[in-house]
Each structure stands twice: as structure tokens, then as C-alpha cells.
Length: 131
Length: 397
Image (cartoon, rainbow over all chains, first blue to last red; front, side, top):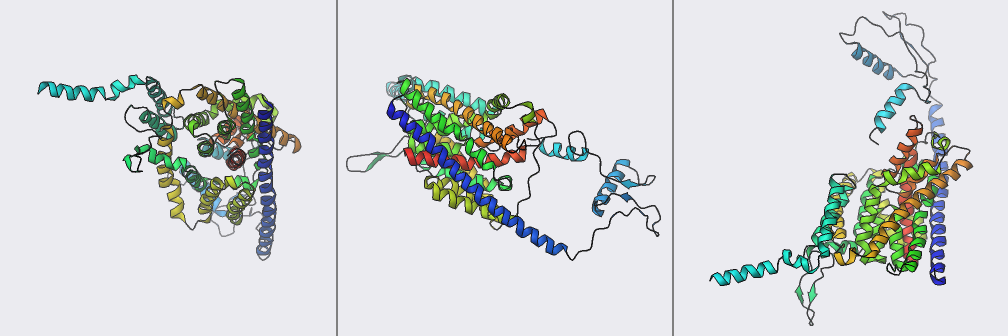
């Protein structure tokens, strides 16, 4: 390659790389700083709003006295609407009028060897199959 | 009477394309190439939204006497009066020539892009920058090839226009080529879109060759959620920073970010819908047909086209390799927290390149979901290739 061509090529390669990296590194810095500020602000807001709320119930393993059947033993942190959905799914799978079976306990499925619970894996597989 | 009718019919036939095509038989080859592109678009599904109109534009431009190439300018007499209007596609082509269509396509892309994964992990920008290495290394290659093989004779501007194929971004390639090498626009656009469609075939062997099984199996931690304020400020910040640094990239990046702000703001849903549907589709038709119609036989069937096809492939390979190698560097620096496979997505080609990272990663570990992690470098690559285009235009334009 001629000296002129080599000089121009090196100029484009070096300055092109440098400017592209500088522009994107500048964006990284600005977005990182902005992200940290936003995380701090939202964290403070969450703390402020969480201070007045009562602590979540631990484990309602005991059946309610007035309940006709034993209440479901559920793991801590599973909200009521999730229990309702799981119960509905079980009833749909069992068929019939929903009689003849009872849900005794609900607990999270253990992680599989891939590092995720089986249902989580199934959901991810379903949602990303198209890709 | 019979003689007159015969003379008229004979005159019509002699002036028809069936006769005129033999004055330049290369047009037959161009029509055959257009048919091959139809096959690839329709039967193989290779980027059909653009390849099909490009192929049809190519077909129209090579019909003798039809005056439908992008270069069929109006004819003026000495007094400046128009004696013949330009062809239909000549007028559509003005949107390419004046640099209107590519930024409008970017507007639509902006309304369809979620920059959340990039905002959540800004380090992805580095992978988007590294993968632009394909552009600059190909520029070097084009300059060398042009000097070594005088039949190719690539000028510095042409080398820049060819190199941008490595950005794996059609509108950016067209935006640069229409300024630096308008005569090569057709070949560059066809090469760029063809290779983008071939990303799932080109990238995996390079990704596998440059990474170990252990690296490919890395499971990355979940991305943090991004607030709405961050998503709203991102387009404004990117526009300001990139446009201040590389003003030549402002048209592309500005329109991309306008589209994104329209999406994220949620207050101009109608405009956002129009930009990503009707406007995008209309501009895609005009862009495809008029770019295809630049591929006339005299311009397309030249040794330069072969050079562009070879260099375009190299550009994609270099870009992928640079991204993966930078991913490996990040893997080492973070103590194995970054899967190097997401680096290949930095070449743009949204979302195809991110899908490839996901698929190659899942082959090693079926429970590994790299898609969202790869979307970060993928959309960073769009910004990176626009910056690289701005750099090329500012140095060579």
C-alpha cells in the first residue's frame, strides 16, 4: 500500500475507533451516574412509604377456627391472589365440580439443576421459543 | 393499408424491450439477479421487507426503454425548459439522494426499540463500540484491495462506503453510501441486507471458534429494573452527547431518539403508532424500490461489485469477532460474570444478532437466557454504527 493510502487508512481506523469509544464511554458515564441517582431516589421513596406499613404475616400455618376445612399451609411471601390462581388451576385440571380433593399446602418448587424452578423454566421457554 | 399496419407494428416491435435488450445483454443478467433475489426473499425469507422491493426496483431499472432507473433524470433544453420529465423512480430516489429516508426509518426503529436492557447495563455500550471494529478494519482492507487490484480501484470515499456494511445496519449503510459513493449504492445496499439476513449463518461459527464451552455457558445475573424517568431522559441525553461529539451522526441518532421518546413518553401514542407502522412501511417501499433501481447493469456488473460482496462479508466477520473478543475481555475483567456471546450482538442487525447470541448460548446451557442481555449491545450497536457513520462522513465526506 502507498504511504499516502496507509496514512489515511491508519487515520480513519485509529480516529474512528477512538471517537466511537469516546462517544459511547461518555454515554456510559452519564447513564451510570443518572442510574445511581435514580436508584438512590427511588430507594429513599420506597423506605419512606414502607415505614408506615405493617410487617407481612409470617406463616399462617394454623387453620382459622371458623374455617370449615383446614386452611392451606403456604410458604411465606406467597400472596393470596397467587393461591387463588393455583387453586383454580388445580380445580381446572382435576375437572368436575371441584369437589373430592383439597389443597393442603403450597410451597415453592425446588430449583432444577439448571438453576431455576421448573415452572419458571417452562414460562421462560414458552416466552422465548419464538426467538 | 396492409403495408402501413405492418410498418407500424414492425416499428413498435423494433422499439420494444424484446429487441432493445440485445443492445445491452447485461440487462438480462440483471433481471436474472433480480429473480434470484425474489427467490431469496420469498422462498427463503431473507429480509423480505426490503429485499423484495429492492429486487423489484432492480428489475424495473433494467427494463429497456422504461426509463425507470434511479438515474432517469429530467431532460432540459438550452433555454432551461424541461423537454422530458424524469422517471417515476428518479423522483422517489430523491429521498435517498437527499438523505431523507434513512433517518425516517430510524424514527420508526426508535418507536419500536426498548433501550431498557442498555440503560440497565450501560457497559453494553462498550460491546456496541467494539463491534464497530468491523467497519474500520474493512476500510483498511478496501483501501489495500483497491491499491493491490487496480481493476477495483476503490477510492477512499468508496472504501468508507463499503466499510459501513460492517455496521450491519441498512439505513446507516445507505445514508453513508449516498454521500460517499452514490454509484455503488445499489451494490452496497444489496450486500448489506443480504448479509444481515445471513447473520444466523455467518456469526455462530465465529462465536464458537473464539469462545470456550465454559465461557459460552456463563449465566448472567438478572438486569435491574429501569425507572420511567431514566427511559425518558435516555433519548435526550444520547442525542445531546452524540450530536455534540459527532454532528454528522445527528440526523440518524436524533431521529432514532425522537422515535424512542415518542414511545416512552406515552403521550403521543398516535404519532408513535404512525411512525412504526404506516410511515415506516411507506418509507420502506420507497427506499427499497429506489435503492434497487440504482442497480443498473452498467453500474452493478463491474469488478467493484465482487469486491463489495467479499469486503461486506469480511466486515460482518470482523465486526462479530471484535464484539466477541471484547466480550471475552469483559468476561476476564468481571471474573466470569459476562457471557462473551453477547458481544456478537454489538454489530446491530436488531434483533437478529441478539437472537443468535440467545440460540448459541442455549446450545451450551438450555437454562441460559441471554436474549435480554444481548439486546443491550444490540441496540448499542445501532447507536455505535451511527456514530461510526458520522466519523466516516466527517473524515471522508
